[in-house]
Length: 402
Image (cartoon, rainbow, N blue to C red; front, side):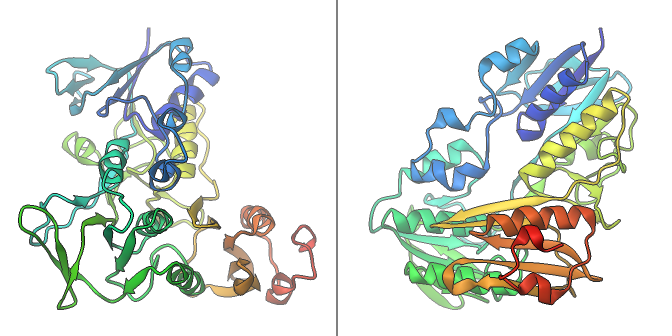
């Protein structure tokens, strides 16, 4: 009986199990995960789970019965430490080996850690898994002073939850605007103002130089100044987990390189999906994406490739973020030089920014504007040409834009 081993018990790993069975694979399935939990959602960790509005059980992607009915063995709390391509087996940290016929690397990513003075002090937290949130939430006392290092999605989502729970929040961002790597300048300005309305303090163009404290974090030194803090959340990006692939001799370049089907790696019978991969985007450029959509869709494509039904990857990427009462939904990938068209009024807290490239919609950023997001995704997928004037005219319903 053919055996497929999946390294990584995350969103991509769970989806691969479902897709392989749906595509008729009837061999043996084994999922290896280094956390002691079955695959669970990560996006709610910095939002609903941190705030306490979502219980742990609701995080899990599938009930236990799903894996039982799928005849999938879960090996949890164990890490893969090596791949023997000649013997076609995975080496685990419990000194056992796991033979495979095909191997899927869904190893995901890990937080980027800072290496400045005092970075090991208790009271400094990162957010990637359930245990991280549990540890940090225990210190979320009203009036506590939280320093957020990094003004990206994670940092601002945590800042929003913290303010609603009564903490004092200061955000330190090395770049000149918040979420600079993820959204356009109008969106950055809007979200900074929204957080300031909640009394969040910002220090932009300000790098953190050191953490200070006697046995525990007491202050942050940034921009030559000292800021008192009771705890800190560091959110300065993530790093793809490619070490297993690299040591096995697979081609890697800021991710495990996969082909146009978003599954096959440079090694026969080894596939990859999710945050850990570098793939060819819709515009023909290589890219690594860190989002649920990409993990799900790449896992589906990897499953197709593993059962001999490869399909070119042409999915439109999408992302979202919840901060206060603001739902940000993004579709497509923006590029420098895109023409920006604002539809709606940011002051009404319901608007969208469309990115036009060569006259076609290439991306959309929608705030509390579901029609703009949904129709925008379709426009991107179809490569539709739209005039800026028509997009900006709110008298025209989105469904009638084209």
